[in-house]
Length: 330
Image (cartoon, rainbow, N blue to C red; front, side):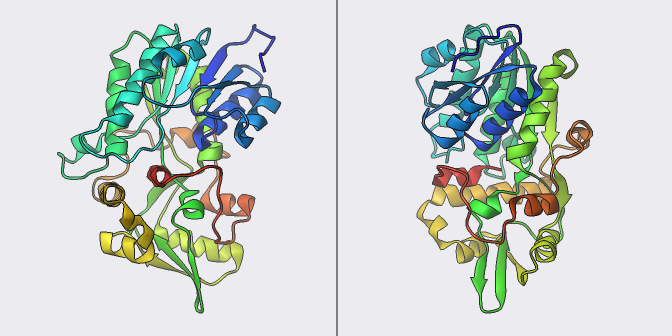
């Protein structure tokens, strides 16, 4: 659907059918201050159809390598662009995610985009001296470095771990003694979490609303800090079900609870490296402003609010087409 009103800035949202992409597109549309061009793999997907009904211009532009010319055309006429790379299991020596991120950035610049907001993460390789393997963090950080070298205003958001991971990928297991809740973190270390379906949008909208203020900034997006045990305790309190925490932190524990992961050694290595990094070094670098996102979005969902809003009872729940690589969603 081509939007007739050209008096408001046009923002292109890459990966608009993803959780982050949907959140960004909807927040921009709901504000009434922006037009949205939603780039997606399939025009007939449910998320794309919902965005079209809300007024987005839906354009088919898959996030694939070698599509720089098509992406440039898709971003043509846009004031801003929200860029993200999909979760990709890295198989050395491939540099799929890094190369794709660079191609997206090049396309934005070639299209004349004035302000890019990129969804990144910390450079685990740099922070750990190469001792932890989490390339879906590090490669995003390298894309950020590349974007900063280009002649375009840029800002960066770093989303916390997703609440939705437990609904889609690390699903609790029911047994005679209640629900076993295997979590990839130790029981008593607080970690940042968020709901990507509602948290990404307000953060990105705030940046586009105040472009000069946020030029060059890296901004964490957090719903709540809480420990794995607190997550289980809250689940019990909200749902009224019996549940207990079980560790899936180590490689052995992870594969004990989720044996299907063993089919991809690269994936297992990355999942373990990610959580070891977060526990030993902190999910965010020490200089990040961990209060920013709740200041600009005080209604960001806590875990308890997310459980009540979703009415999740501990069963598998899909938010759309998924793949093994989606486990790397933070």
